[in-house]
Image 1 (cartoon, rainbow, N blue to C red):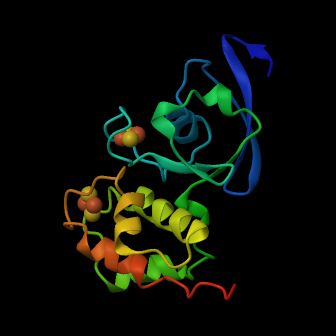
Image 2 (cartoon, rainbow, N blue to C red; image 1 turned 135 degrees about the horizontal axis):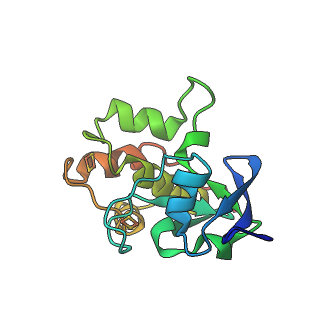
Length: 162
Ligand code: FES
Ligand code: FES
């Protein structure tokens, strides 16, 4: 990183693209992504780590971008839901959310999809309790959660034979 007018150079791989931006060294990762990298999929909700609207994946792990200092993530790989779909082709999880009406206003959708994707990556055939645990850091004011759980459950894959 190099200083320039009080801003510092931050290198991130955002949704698969290596990018560089000059950011305020006090910026949260959420604000740097939205304002300096133009990645607006993560939403600013509570800004206190409670709602999950700002969820991204950093180096593959779920992270609340409102709780991280942007400069601390220099060199990191950051994924948002913007890189989930292949053009107009939704992923099975996105399609399931659509088919099962697992969102209404959509404010929680980014975080819910990433939390669900992360869970299915780690546990291909999760129980409902594991699904509810995985999305417990993501608040939805619209759906009542049952349709979200059903959408994630519908994407479960049989466990590989041991
Ligand atoms: S905005 Fe980050 S958890 Fe709510
Ligand atoms: S769909 Fe509105 S907050 Fe979840």
